[in-house]
Image 1 (tube, rainbow, N blue to C red):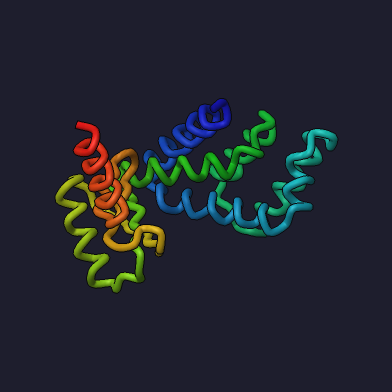
Image 2: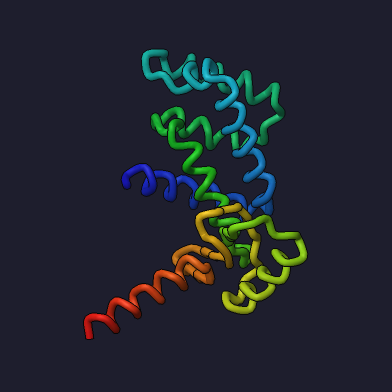
Length: 183
């Protein structure tokens, strides 16, 4: 819980700076690239995050990498602050929440769509259009196949779940039969 609070605070601060500078997309990409780099090079991540190394050494290591990567000054300052405040380990969570803020700002919602079989792009597009009418937002669909559904689809957008699966219908039918037998 505390991690999410910290991530939100830093993501909101960076997002507000990005809005002022007109670099919302760029800052998001820069965050993603740096998170990916730290994931690919665990030794670098350890060198920058490990409190056993002096802060000046960790910052110097980061600045060397940032300069070679051509990182924008605002992102350098942001990561410097995270190093200084011993918050760099939260960077993946900060990046995730930053992307949520980007979506919210662009009126975009992400939908998790599951079906028992693979759906073609045309069908997914039609489902996305229907979900856009329901939510009033532009929908970005992330599709996954789930054979346990038997048939039909399940769409989840944040807390909203639209369950049109055969499994749910069978479960509902089973409950109706139970109530009928008991009543």
